[in-house]
Amino acid sequence: MFPEEEMLGIDLVIPDINYLLEKREKIRGIVITHGHEDHIGALPYLLPQLNVPIYSTKLTQGLISVKLKERKALSGAKLNVIPPGGEVTLGKFRIEFFPVCHSIPDSVGLIIYTPIGIIVHSGDFKLDYTPVDGKPTDLSRLAQLGAQGVLLLLSDSTYAELPGYTPSERVVGETLDHIMADAPGRVIITTFASLISRVQQVIDSAAKHQRRVFIIGRSMTDNVNMALRLGYLNAPDGVLARIDELKGMPRDKVVFVTTGSQGEPTSALVRIANRDHRWVHIVRGDTVVISATPIPGNEALINRTVDSLFKQGARVLYSKVAPVHVHGHGSQEELKLLLNLVKPKFFMPIHGEYRHLSLHAKLAQSVGIPKDNIFVLEDGDVIELTPEVAKVTGKVASGNVYVDGLSVGDIGSVVLRNRRMLSRDGMVVVIIAVNRQTGKLVGRPDIISRGFVDTREAKDMIEESRNLVARVLDHGGSRPADWGFINTKVRDTLNKFYYKQTRRRPMVLPFMVKV
Ligand SMILES: [Zn+2]
Ligand SMILES: [Zn+2]
Image 1 (tube, rainbow, N blue to C red):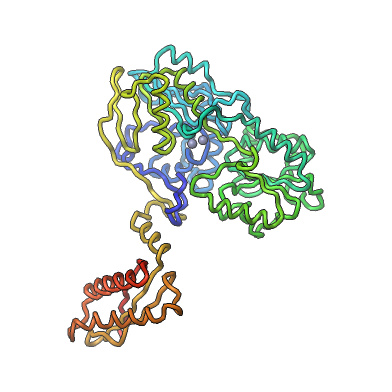
Image 2 (spheres, rainbow, N blue to C red):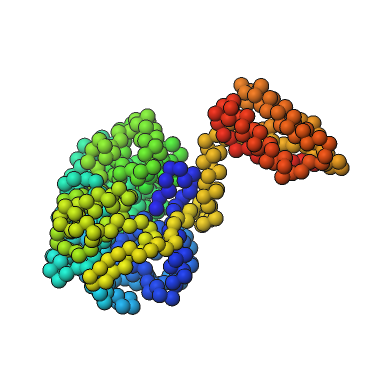
């Protein structure tokens, strides 16, 4: 998962796999449907604990290798390639990969043959009949299965809110064509590093309009090189250019492809927007295309980047103002078609927030699946299946592990609560001097604050709080200072006092120095 806005300073959220670790000897492998970040991003953190074989298609394996290498977790990983249409047997399960269309090539869904029946897992999918990489979702295979009888369908719910059909990737190709033809200067296109088919569209369109393509940024470069090597990206000779060829090239012959569609602070686009990039600075006449939708929580960062690009004279196109992106997930009519083809006995919506799952469940009801045969589950819920019956029978431990920089899992909810508190109301440090010999208080305490109040304007209040602390602690009379008592007393007193004065709750940190 990408972190939510209130997860301050957290880079990534990965699943808690303790349940799996307890059952380690029963786990035959991890099957990955495609190479998007939300599907492979946790592997570098999981594999050191649970080193089981991984099964995926070729491009997905390529993306996994790039990711594992970045995190220095590649050695010892057991990566196996299964082609779309191929299968693998893991214990009692036989798993067939069937091609699905998504916003990345080599995506698959899974047909899982179990001793009690067939389970179909859609993976992330849509039903684009004119996809960029030429492979639509294999509907005939699914129709065959439907006739055979499917016990359970698990299906992508991400866009269950949207009526109708998701537009074809073709739409984006046409828009890019217009942009490349009409842009008076350079075109800077930003998207996810894993959106290989979008990069292909950019290359195709650039070639058509005699522009040369410069790939900017490490993760984008790594993924593009890997995809070229494996044959998932095709570039006519002379279209891709090295950055040292940029000098002297006419502006209307240049295209940059970068990351930064989510306003990530270290991405190339954000550096460009902040005039902090080594090679690329915005000049009047540049066109910037943000070919991605904001992941919820990133809107503010993206808007700031867009504003700054406009200020520097660029024209900026993003999905609200031009069809420069279509998403990779099926809308309501596509989800219904899948349900109708597969005709499962039981249905479980997956991949999405709870509201998406609920809406998907309603759609399933509308096409005739009985309400009692539909299961909207949360992480950790256990469903038990027999050929006749499905029921929820319990709950196992599950949850999130936060990744902050290099550390995994040592950031708990307490740390996050502290970060939220600090970000909201700041902090107050109270320095209390105690006589080393007698253990008695010396003078008035000092108070230092950060992010709480303007210390010049609130000088009187801070002074008053110093007096207050001094008075409260003196009540103890002449006995030596007990740290536990002082700590609690100071915090209680100041919490109350500051709240009354300011309606804020800064973090109060008493501190004792022996003098
Ligand atoms: Zn995906
Ligand atoms: Zn996904």
